[in-house]
Image (cartoon, rainbow, N blue to C red; front, side, top):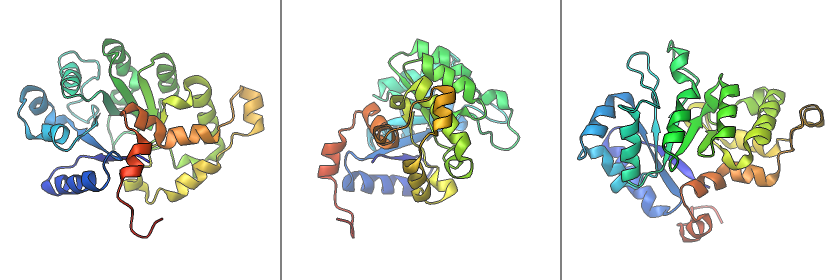
Length: 258
């Protein structure tokens, strides 16, 4: 299993991540969150302390929030976005993630469309781009983009509740994802900080099966155990170059568990 930890301000997070890295080497994947107020400091101040999350705490990926009520920026803006990607690659980070869709409050929806990642993916073929939340409600555009761009991946974060409250709808979405994008480019996201323990969602996902009616009517494949294992962690581990077998073998045992 891989764990992504978003960066929040303050030294306590640094302490937590430092301990976690020591107790779970190779398993904990630190994901740094980068929001609009930090952009200029990160791009134009090479010594900014936030780079320590990459150089010292080993951040393997950075998540960007480009949509805001004021001050939004485009992911294909050569003046704003591209220097960020170049800095990531310079630091050895080749996986970047984006909050798309699911607006906060009264944000303008258009700033959260996934369309601006197409040119970025073309211009940075060595970078892997992850679209979170399936950019809901822009699911059609998101699936089309991920199906056509080999370096664009989709995270199910923000949609996992549909497995429980709208199972047929989620079967339909999952069927499209498997048929058009493929399970190798799908990533799990629990949103546990917002929706509580991920256990019920994990159980529901593991029990998920696409109905015969949807498979016959739309040509969807059935989701397999191998698909689920890939989505739940193997895909993300592969993207980050993590050897899970070695990491699990060398990890410290969890008290109370075999």
